[in-house]
Image (cartoon, rainbow, N blue to C red; front, side, top):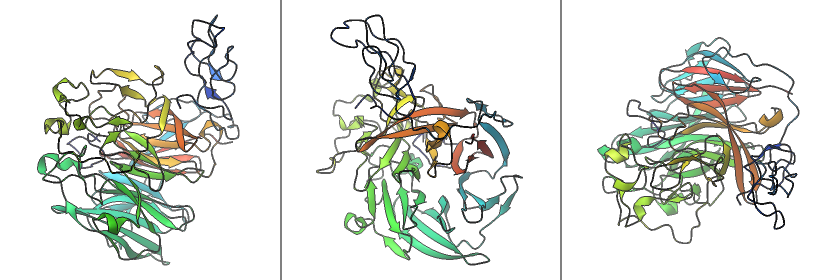
Length: 512
């Protein structure tokens, strides 16, 4: 959730049991009864599961919790894919951060320009670039903290929304321009020995900005990712509304709230604002503000998605071609309440006066809300089995619960955290439970209604279950009070930049 004090628009504010798996999982809560013959009481709280997940047997031996005197074992934890053992080490922490694991180190590299939104690492030269929202590109020496102007020949204008290197060292930059209408452009810079040869890959047709009262929902275009085979660029387009409300006589457009794919060889491609013209490039639909995209070690695409001005989930989504992720009809796996003719916002404890859409009085029954797309089945976010980033409000009472502590199936991450900077150990260079893990930073809630403000680093361990993913989420580092915005993982070091008069940080993980 991003407050009015900043120019960045990130968010509006901003099967229940895992199957057996490899490695060691964290046990779940005790079960109610292990079997018909066991009878009554439940097992105790789960301990570390020896089989890495699955429902415990009557004695709780298959990764379940400790069985009660007559009850069976509880559900085991999520399967955890373990890498090679980590060498014993104690991390050195010199940054003003709280690190939850003793083997992790943390260092403040130094200040970065105000409004720093992106960090990118060149795999060919080892150079790091950072970019501000207002278009300033700099090099960052991660050893000394020196920041210097860079890429002075970049031809783009407007806001820099995304910046990534391809595996061959080509630099991709996504920009957005607002002037009553919103347009996007994607550029590619190929090294030429002394600089870069730039081409305009994509421009977009304009679409109207929201009305003034809801102008903070110009989520526009966002970051991109290049496929590991260097064939395609995937980039996200955000929504122009908070929750699909009518804004200035318009809601969403075909070119908004979607993920597109174009060949890396594209030049001067113009994307229209109509479904037929976008069809060859539309990869997935129904994302609200997918601010970071990343591939995991299996080559599957994931996106973090920032949720609305109500206590409904932010999301981690497994992005598949042709799938629809629900926006604006759903958040997490919960229906948008304004679709209900009987909805009473005055009785909804999930709404708060500090939220912009609440101030604009846009949460009301909406008889003109468009029907869901015909023949479309919405795809749920990745199921979050905790233990962290899983605070949930189940109904209009506004009562906050911890999903994993209460065995509540939860599809998303805590509302208003604004997850950003998604990366994966896609090369499998880390050890232990960090191996092939994903990591995201949370920009953080402006007002902490959920008791889970974010401003942290979270590790996720997605596990494929059928055609979907489930994950564990573990908070590793807290205290990024200057609003983390992006991250880059290089070997066993994670580099994080923050947005508000912020800093660059280096987080060091243990090695095998």
